[in-house]
Length: 383
Image 1 (cartoon, rainbow, N blue to C red):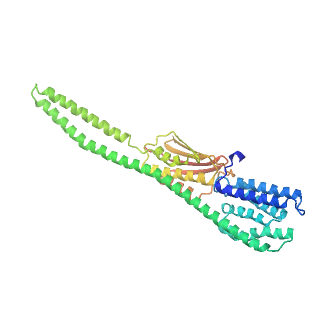
Image 2: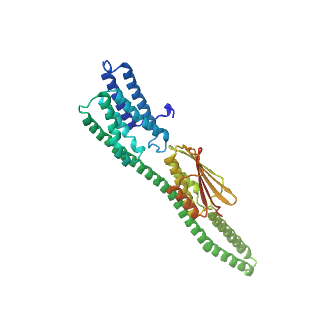
Image 3: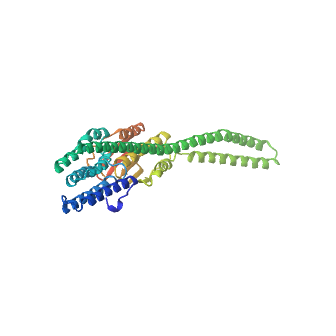
């Protein structure tokens, strides 16, 4: 990640100001001290600088990726810097950095585990401080107090993480609801148009056919001076019947579900988060409501997985026909640390995709590679 790509959120600003104040206080109290050398002071300031950059790198992009090994290593380095500061500086208020570090943990380990381990990683710096500085006066009172601050940071960040997840789920549900609502409205309009077309064909068409037959009979039995007018009426009736049939055919021909329109409703709210490209090279106008709904839900699940579990910034949806089969390929550019394409762990989301495609007599395969995650859906082409 380039430094130009760093984005500082308000909560990050608060942490950075706190680190700056703690560093400045260290410098102000230690400069001129007879027990702390200039080299030690420089080393202490370097620790603060490294801790600051580490914090910025770790806390980018909202919820941190639990599977990001680099960030996990950085979290361990951050804790090591706290230990170094406790050994280099006699200032007990440096434990504030441990509170900031504690706020990162809910994104890297289960909350209960962090809670159970908190006495250990909270006490270790104080044990090191006691050993290096040979100080015990009020030390364990400070340790106990700062441990409660660490617990507070853990609880608050766990609450925030849960709130973020609930917000994400609500947004996902809202996007899916809008897309499904669009499909349902299309299906409702399709049913209504079909009903109107059938009524026009059965009623108006029937009466116009009867009128034409009667006019034909009248033309044959009428006197010669009346035939031109009757023949003109017969021509108009036949023209009307042809127009009715054409109108009914048009209503049926253009009365299909538009899956692309529903996909746009699904992806439009995500323009600022991820680029979604849809390349449709197949005729999908004959999809049934069940097919369109299941495909939409599968694409929604793939989109959710990409945003939640990868670092992708682009998702490409390709729809094409091949050998009387409809293919839907969904690929992201998230990249995977593992290139084992035969070992995709299927959670409930991927199993749900397989179940929906199986309901359509199709198949679903998943490939995880260094280039990203690929979902391939194949089902019989609609006729």
